[in-house]
Image (cartoon, rainbow over all chains, first blue to last red; front, side):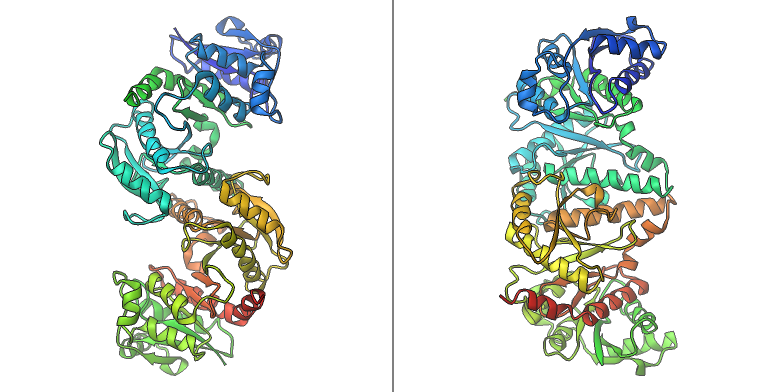
Length: 315
Length: 315
């Protein structure tokens, strides 16, 4: 039995959206998967009842506290020891669940990732990544998207390997093409950071390095499956895409490509380089977004992602 | 009489598109403006004849050489002393034309800007900027978009002032809102560079500093009229927008917002912080794009942009 931990109290519309999303996910997860909800038991059961869904279909771990968006992540993670996130990470660290997902406090999720499940040995700095749609019909992975805003080339080079393993294991892309996000295609282009990263990735025989990719090709899928950049650039790319998605929607310019840009379909941001699958959902997650987040978590677990990453850095 | 210098040999489709664009611009420029074409006189006249346009309507400065895209910019600028770009900058430096525009070698245009017309005293590093459309009905200015990929905070802070003067003088935006492109709204967000830039801009009483702007708001026009970032980030934003524009067009999702993203309507990239108006057009410029480039150059000249910038840094 594979256990997917879900924070029922996480996100702006929790517990309703979180629990409704878990109900939606029931139909999509595998027969051997079970969702474990962390949160206020009475409230969870009330939402389940309203949804006409038996509480039997879930494991529920009752918690009494909630880490709010305004709370200081590190302090609150410890202070609110019975919060859904803190308890969830406790379960994850001891192996009582196989992955943990929340649309709640990103800061607290990072604290849990770094201090409860901890970075994989050999990984300099774990990263958060985002799956972006492309018109080539398969997604690409962009990392880092906001965790490490000032990255050394050695850190970026590791993201190439981490992203490659993720793309192969979870997204099912064989020999994923890894590229550095840069302002020109040529090897000599870029800033000091990207030039040095290029040199490191070029020497890494474990990945299929294809060179630089320019911003214009991120969403074409023509050049790269795994796109490496620092968290400042990645976060800007992501937010810009979100902004344009919203503008496009407002102007009525919808189509399949832009629909795929909708965060509700993306299912959250995997934290990569830590010793267990952790997925952070968008704060404004709807039930549909929570469902996607749960399915992403299940995918990471099923793909044995953590073991593969641990193995890659075991040297 | 206001003289707009235009490289008739610049761009992938020169001289045809360059000259055709100049013909198109004739109807739009002011009665006191005159276009000065630099290039192969026979070829220019042949295109004009094919267009049914009298050569009398232009000044033509005959040149015999062309700086090609593959040429080394700095070396060729001197070696091809009779190239359209080198001669154009000679005219610009001695005041025989009031501004110069080319869709040819960006590198050569930068060499001319830096060594022929030279940076304005007090400007640490000149910059190239781009006008981006917003759904608020007025454009925003993004800078730097690729010239300075590793920027000190002092350089970025100057871009705030330079951009503010440009937005007010050329775009006609009163008290333009200046913001730092950042990954969060709060003062404490960002990388070392943006945090330090924020502090410098906050203290600058000459501009209307509004804080940080996230990537999601670049194109809304809600937050900022002038958006400051380093050339790596700005170039990535620009290329990503271009890429999404193309994807959108391919998918048939056109609308007024995306049409405004079309480089053909934007009219090139002003080089700011040098002692004369210089506009660099897109290499693949069509006649329509050249027309926009010429009109942008005229705007910079009419707005007395150079004098305003020189005045602002005179201390």
